[in-house]
Length: 168
Image 1 (cartoon, rainbow, N blue to C red):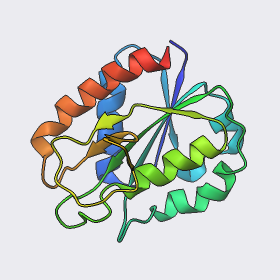
Image 2 (cartoon, rainbow, N blue to C red):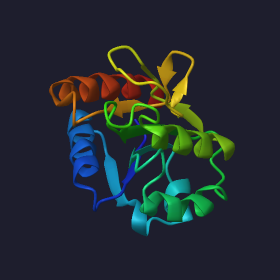
Image 3 (cartoon, rainbow, N blue to C red):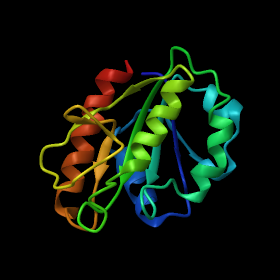
């Protein structure tokens, strides 16, 4: 498998914990972890397989570290590259915009030619609306550590197994 770039906001504890679980679930696969706050256009473009992690803030907004990088993301050239997005959200307190950050980033990467992979089922979640929903799937992995923490390890494991097939 080609080397993977794993980008996320390293100062967010919960997102960092999920990123660590993802990296561990890949086992011996070569994964570079990059702080999105310090990431360059060249770094994003140097990987054929990219994983990005994001939480959703407030009423469906990107965290400031992704929001600041988004203009640079919009200038990338990612034709032929694959991007998988994982996101954290709270489906109880923010059920009208659960994991919107996943959808925002997935659409941004699609707009610059990347193929978004790693779609997961919306079954097992209780929310009203999500920008990350496309038909009956999320545009990535949805994690709710506030309300479904017991499901996190299994969801990560299953998603990584899916990505191993989709990244090849």
